[in-house]
Image (cartoon, rainbow, N blue to C red):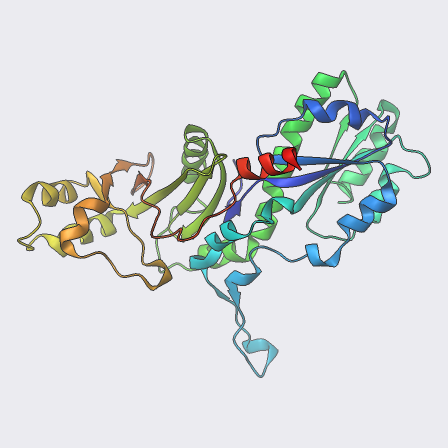
Length: 333
């Protein structure tokens, strides 16, 4: 992953083509790991759905505060990372359209022409082309009209290529939505963070695969995330730098009620206190610290340590709709 994402979750992918089009044939072959697919044979109806202005709102909008200012030059944006994960409680998040795939071989309208009629600035556009249309597709890509194209091939091969491209443009979609928050973190030098660093991107990608994560939300600017797999099992990836690890030990080294073994684990940086000050919650009482300790591991090529915790009750106080719940719902509808 070469993107710095503040959030990501499964989205809806619209496939536009004639009922007997190539897209209809390869739809059942596409991966359902992180996407819901809807095939629409009527381009006008597809545009009506895609260009619905109510879908233009970014899921990160509620994380931005704009304090009143009398002058344009003094206007500021305050980024509230603590609320990004609240998107998890939005049952409509999987209905968000991230990508449109268009079969160039349609009656009455050219695929590239249809792309020019898509008004939503965040949606990514992929077009399926014949070999003779390659130069037109290259020109459209270079001019930013489309975000990718694939030449039609044998159906399984095309589906595999399309899966890879969909995953790429979905990451680009969430990267675009994360830009303001990315900049706020990277331009705040007072706080050391792993977020945005190459070593962290590689590390985080491994974590996502290891735990079969399909959606995640940044909860701390240092690089801590709330993560969920398809069935809704939640994990928190906690990051701490060396100063924070040492501070945790100095916080309790003279507290008599904490066993010496626990103190030594913190001193040796073998454990991380896995709790967050989000939602106005305070740190647990010292007597409760052992419940919040998880094994700490160093992140290669960095000064950071991490731990994975399943103690997510401090973040998730309500039931939420998992991706599996959504799949079951639409399959039984």
